[in-house]
Length: 286
Ligand SMILES: NC(=O)c1ccc[n+]([C@@H]2O[C@H](COP(=O)([O-])OP(=O)(O)OC[C@H]3O[C@@H](n4cnc5c(N)ncnc54)[C@H](OP(=O)(O)O)[C@@H]3O)[C@@H](O)[C@H]2O)c1
Image (cartoon, rainbow, N blue to C red):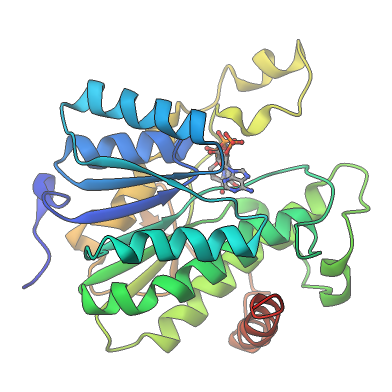
């Protein structure tokens, strides 16, 4: 069966959105539910996740919305989340790797720089664990929310990924993690060619979401005033998740619902190196 077209593209299909309790992820999950999708809201907080599920059900009238616990800073939690989803025996048509942290300092439970660990490595592991189900459910898509911040990363210092961020602003580690999102999506496309799984990385725009929490008041409201709303910010994620226009594409980067050339640093060689290291690192605590 091919993918349905147009406004009903989500109808009856199953979506798992990470970090869907707030921000762009919640807006994405709500739009998919509104279009008749079956939606899993993956969140590290049960209270916030369940509140989001109730809110999405109430605002869309769609009861096919569920909470899944997922802490991307802990690979054991990622495994538990994948197992819980797989145990439900339901197809997976679209995985939206959306959750992210910025200006965060510290290490994940398994000892990786926090932004790399949450934004890339946790999603790498989750995707690997769900890839079999995605392939069985094809045509299927893996959508990874990156950022135009990835253009400012000059490469990946793999040694630095084993210690907390040292930069003053915290933006260096964020840019590297978002470059990893682009590299991961491109390498996954190469590895899933002709399997019915296609991949997409994207910049959502500059969006007034909770991601600006670290910016103190009164700077934050002044800063976020002119930004996109979370619904506007979800548009490119939804385009990559459901649009028939990109059904045949894979491994590309998108901005404002259109293809955009990624950073020149995003080479197939660097993507292959990141993949190899990510595979080794995600089996560390197996
Ligand atoms: N906003 C922008 O301008 C912008 C620009 C470019 C790219 N992006 C990207 O867009 C994506 C969504 O961000 P947003 O703006 O919607 O930010 P947000 O409102 O802060 O939402 C981020 C989501 O990620 C979740 N999350 C954080 N750490 C997690 C962890 N360890 N495990 C599981 N979930 C975790 C958060 O959960 P909690 O609520 O529990 O913290 C929240 O649900 C991110 O990947 C971000 O990098 C955003």
